[in-house]
Length: 141
Image 1 (cartoon, rainbow, N blue to C red):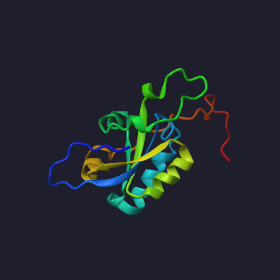
Image 2 (cartoon, rainbow, N blue to C red; image 1 turned 120 degrees about the vertical axis):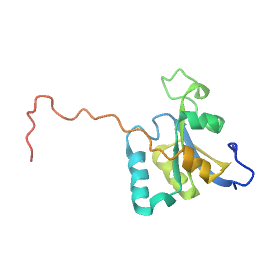
Image 3 (cartoon, rainbow, N blue to C red; image 1 turned 90 degrees about the horizontal axis):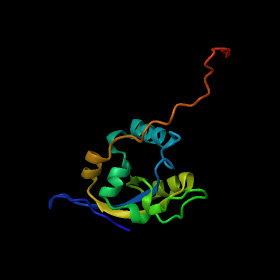
Image 4 (cartoon, rainbow, N blue to C red; image 1 turned 180 degrees about the vertical axis):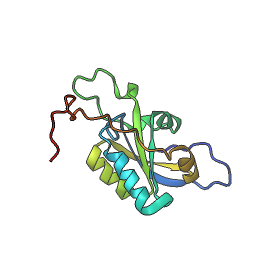
């Protein structure tokens, strides 16, 4: 599976690895966001790790790469689900992410400048946990 966004004739493309999964499978618990933040803090802007929300997944035509059957009790077919993706400069990063989160992998040819401009945002924040007591009866340790 490969896809290429519109690029200028002078902009070189690179073959990069990607991981696709149903929306939330990669990003819902906040761990992916933390991973990207930590890597950016350590390596700066040179980190080749990009999150693609459903809009960019559609723009790059990555939906066909998602080939898992729907889960038990899920009446929507994979082609009807919203999909999210990760793209990385190193295939080993995508392999690790797939082992951690699941999903389907592939490669695509894309200019890294396009990814930096369009896919530089972080995944959404994890939903707030419901562990705090509303009555304030918890004691600090």
